[in-house]
Structures are given as C-alpha cells and as structure tokens.
Image 1 (cartoon, rainbow, N blue to C red):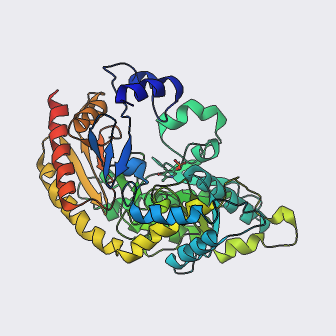
Image 2: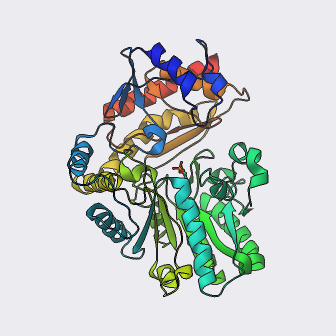
Length: 443
Ligand SMILES: *Cc1c(COP(=O)(O)O)cnc(C)c1O
C-alpha cells in the first residue's frame, strides 16, 4: 500500500466530511488529503514514511494519544467479556460504572446519564428532554430554544436549529426550525476599555431583555461554556455563565451546557462550567470522553428533570432510542480514559503544559499580522490578518510540510493537542506553526 494508491481509492469511494471533494482531487489539490497508516502518541504516520504531529487531536477527540497502551488494554479485556448489548431492558457493568463516575464528577448534582453515539444526538436529546420535562410539568407553551450567535451544537437537522454557523446552516435553512439567538459574549467584541467581564455583562443584559419578553415560550438556553469552538475559538469570561444561570433560574428556563468540545479537561478544569461555579440542568459530553476511540455521547441531568418523567404512563417517559446506546466497548474506553485522568493527575499536569504552550506562543502577540492571541487551558488560538481567502488552505499545506496537522477555521489558527504532548513536541508544534504562518503569508 502506498499513499497514492489509497488516496485514489478513497477519492473514488469515500465521501469525506466537511469537504468540497473537488478540492481534494488531483496532484495539485488545494486541500491535499493525508492517507494515514498508523498512529502512536501525538504522531500520525502515512504509508510513505512521513509523520504528522496531530495538533488538533483528530477533531478534538483524542486526549491521550493514538494507540494508547492503557486504553488498548482495557478494550482488549472488554472484547473478551461483552462487546455490546441492547440497553433497553438490559444493563451492564461499563455503563453503570461510567454513569456513577460521571455523576460523581458533577458532585452528584447531575445524577442521571442518558447515552447516544455522537454529539449532535446529545444536543437533540437535551433539547427533547427539556421540552418534554416542561410539558410533563404542565408547561405546554415552552416549545422554543435560545442559543448564542456563533454557536455550534452539531449538524443534524434538529441540532442545526441551535447552530449559528452560516456555512453549515444556510443551505438547509428551509428544513430547520431555527432557535432565536442572543449576542455572544466573545471577548474579541470588547469596545475600547472594556474587559472580557464587561463584554460578558453586556451580552447577559441582552439575554435578560430577551428572556423578559419571551421566557414563557422558551424551554432552554444552550451554550458552549467558555469557548465557542467551531465558530473560531471565541473565548469568553465565566461571568457570562454566572449571569446566564441566574437569569435562567429567574425566568424558569433550563440551562444546557454543551461540553462536547470543552469538557474532559480541555479548558483547565474537568468541566468548563466549573470555572463559573455553576450547575447546568443538562450537560452534554462526547468527543474526548472515549479518549478518541469510539463514538459515544452522554447527556447528564438533574433529579428534578428525571422526576418529571417518572410515572406509570409510558407516554410520560423519555421516548428516544439509539441502536448503540451505551455501547459496552465505548463505555469501557471512557472508563479507561477517566482512569488516566485520575492516575496521572492530568488536570494538574495540563496546567504546566498549557503554560509551556503559552510561553511558546507569546512572541506571536507582537506579530504584525496576528491579533487576539488567546488561550484557556489546552486550547490556544490567534486570528490572522489576511483578506486573501486562500490563507487557511495555504497555512494547512505549509504546516503539513513541517510535519504538523493543523486546520485553521477561517483566519483563526488554533491548537488543541492531545494531553500526552511532551514539552519538546510542544516546541516542535509551535515552531512549525510560526514558520508555516510566515510562509503562508509570504506566498
Ligand atoms: C463537535 C461538536 C458537536 C457535535 O458533535 P458530533 O459528534 O460531531 O455530532 C456539538 N457541539 C459541540 C460544541 C461540538 O464541538
């Protein structure tokens, strides 16, 4: 097998996600595709002996490197015990243990775990559960949702209703029952002299006036705590979450924290919302929770929501099912992932690694073509001043030439590396990215 063999067969038979396939075609493709033969730690290897440092954790899912020996061992053991069983009417050890451990991580405040296989499904489950729990409680009018501008909560038709990214949404607009949006607390929107907390308070004031008018019809507000990742790593002050929580309580609206991207230690605490000292009514997890091994998503919720469905009548139950709900292998991968967090004191270790990354990136703060250098925990980003629409592709290619896999979102270059990155690998990543930036801007 060679790179070009596999590439040709892939272009003929595989419809790749989030792509214009035509840009992948041909020897001088605008966006070259990389055939991956194997992975080890932070490195991906192709068939022709090249390697690439996975600077984006393979779309934000991989926490502890590729082919992690501890997760591999847990999965091998699980394979010989139970690969999967229907979760309607049956239960098994990995799903019970995972539910108990996730609930414990929320301090017991979110004691009920519902399972699916991907992030968009978790979003839809949280929306349906919120709506249905209000209806079961006699609040028939609460049929609408609220999201932030620039939000991303997945791309199924239901999840697109609360996603505000034009590229993903506009083509399907006629299919979507769009939620209302309120202003994002994105700290980059600061006017002269405003602090990130000021921006948060301004956005919260807009939320307040929206809720004041419309709360009777709104079931839930859905947010990505601290960082709106998919729309370009928009970071905001935790003050927004504190104020939003207070407003949701005052106006009887659920707060859904979508931590599909920012959960699992990404922002410096195990859950991002913990930095605001708040408790959501629903918490969505996916991406990193299985260590990047298997598709798995979870919606955690409160005793109050659970109680709203607990009844003799089936119609008052939560009527939602996925074939692979609570898959035993995926749950076991998640348990192995949580074991690594505990055994290696990952949250503490990441604090040093994040600081090392910040030190490496610091020179970019004075780069003439860079603005809004920003970081929270293990996510760092900066915006590139360039009105040339080809910058993202050019940067991507220049980074690949330096053995680095990074995929800018528009003109935002970001880093979301696996937590097993060594300090030397971190230096390699940063140096390569800076060189790629200058090469892409010079081209
Ligand atoms: C990736 C993502 C989703 C969607 O998850 P999928 O598994 O891709 O469906 C939802 N919300 C956020 C915040 C995400 O980053």
